Image 1 (spheres, rainbow, N blue to C red):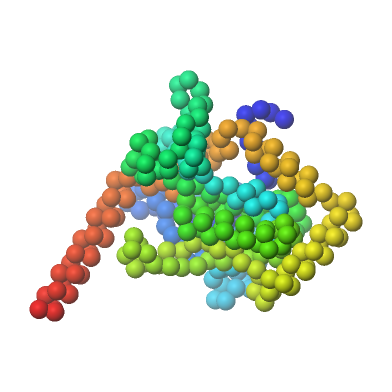
Image 2 (cartoon, one colour; image 1 turned 120 degrees about the horizontal axis):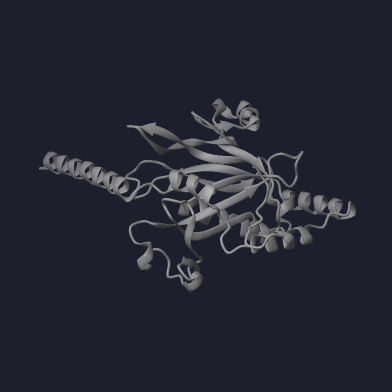
Length: 294
């Protein structure tokens, strides 16, 4: 195996809850209230949709794709969901610093060094919104390729926190049979103080509709027994994935990094402009409310 090259699960397509659009001559991210499944091919209009998108959408209410049946490839939650604090070089898309809140790997002129990771709020290198949590969830959608995955990428705390909790809980409740559970990705919305009452959508992981936990665990046991009888070795698969991830200090390459920077890491100037506009709107609204009350 080539050293220094992270071996990640084979990707057949992407899962997103937004897209890139052109505004005033610039490509900017635009959020959506539904899932979209795309291939790994782009054209002038953006990412080309995967055939599974149309198939799943045809079964969805009003053709709004807000839940997707999935299966986990691995039993270990940390192999299905990869998440770290990541600071990207905005010009090359390469990761400069990757940390877990305790320690980080940082690229310097002397090579890759290990430093304490105090989290983005307390790190001098991360000031100005340059460092964010970056998560990748690998799930299987195509039963004809049981080791192929669709990847959901996110820098959202809500999605990363929720997915991490669900994976850990289901792993514990099923006695480690996470890869055998019938699961689905579900899109949820919430409003926060930072969103100024505008819905923020995030991704949750639940059991498939109509299936209770006890039933799901029984199904997982039966699938596990059938797999063992057929000679399938899930423990060896998890261990190989663990070694493959660790084959490089940074999992993300430059080509993937540029797409991530474009989609998730908007410029600080644009972010500040949005905050200022929202603050002005709130001040005007409060001013009008006070005037009416008086």
